[in-house]
Length: 57
Image (cartoon, helix red, strand yellow):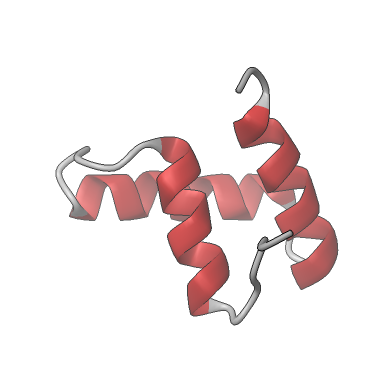
């Protein structure tokens, strides 16, 4: 899905009230912690879940 990272990032930022830049830093930290074995989109989903935010449609 093209642009899915940006769409998820935008939605998570709006729902959480956290700036996109901060969420992006958290994504990179999560990926680093997991040795890059997770996609950026996957890391966003994990971070959202940790915040109690679900993207289930």
